[in-house]
Length: 352
Image (cartoon, rainbow, N blue to C red):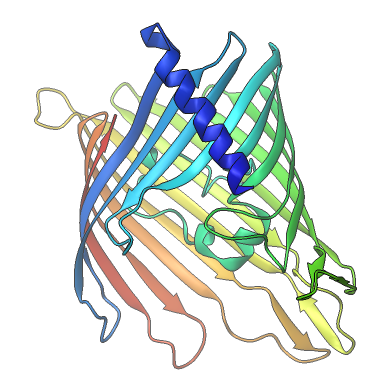
C-alpha cells in the first residue's frame, strides 16, 4: 500500500509539472499557530506554543480526472517530516457519478470530515480522537462511489482498514461505509450513514492465517448543519452530531458488549461588522458527551466512565480567511477520582 500511495503521489507530481495552464493546478490549505495553557493539574509543560500547516495540491490529469496530494506538518513532530495524509485519484464517470481511489477521508460523520480551515474552535469535536472513531471513520485506503442528484448526495465506499500512520490493523477491517446527505434548504443539511467493520485475517510468524472467532459490528452516524440568516448582519450557525459505535470484537461467554456513544451540539452567531477593524465576530459554544464502548460481566453495571467536554471560543475574523481565536475547553469526568480541568488558548489561523 505504501508503494501504491507513492505511485499516486508521483502521478500527481508529474501532472503538476506537465500542466501548461494555470487552472490545471490548484494549491490551497491553512496554517495556524497558537499559545496553549494546559489546565490539567501538574501538567508538564504548563504552556505550549505550537504551529500546524495543511496543504493540498490538486492537478488535473484529463477533463474528467484529477489527482490530489494532501500533506501536513506540525511543530510537535519530533521527526520534523511532512506527512502524506491524502493521496488519491478522482474520476467523474458522468455528471452525477464520480469515483475516488487511494487514501482519503472516509465519507462518514462530520467532526473529522469538516475542513480544518473552517473550525469555529481550535480543536475538532472530541469524538474524532476516540479509539471508536478510528474503527469506523477517519482516513483509510479504499474506493468510494459518490452520486450527487440535485439536493441528495450518496456515498458508498469499501476500505481495507490500514489507515494513516499505521500498518494493516490487526483488530479491525473497515469494510463498507454508506452515507446519505440531503440539502433540505439553502441553510440546512442533514445526513445519516452506517459503517460496517469486521475481523481481519491474522497471520502468525510463519505467515499462516490464524483462525479467529468471526465477528462484525455496525456504527451509526447522523448529523445536521444549519447556517440560518437571522438578518442582513447576523447568521445563526448550528452543528449537531450523533454516533453509536458497535462493539469492535467477538462475542464473549458471560459478558455483555456495550456500544460506545457520542453526541455534541454547537451553537454560534456570526455578527457582520461595518466600518470596523474586524470583518465579523462569532462567539460559539459546543457541548459534547462521550461514552466509550465496554465489555462487562453479564448483569454487572457499566463503569462510570463518561466524559463531558465544553468548548467555547470567540472567532475574530480580521478577513474571511484570517482569523484570531480566543477560547478554551473544559473537560469533566463521571468517574470518581478523575479531576476535571480547563485549557485555554489564543490562536491565529490563515486560510489560503
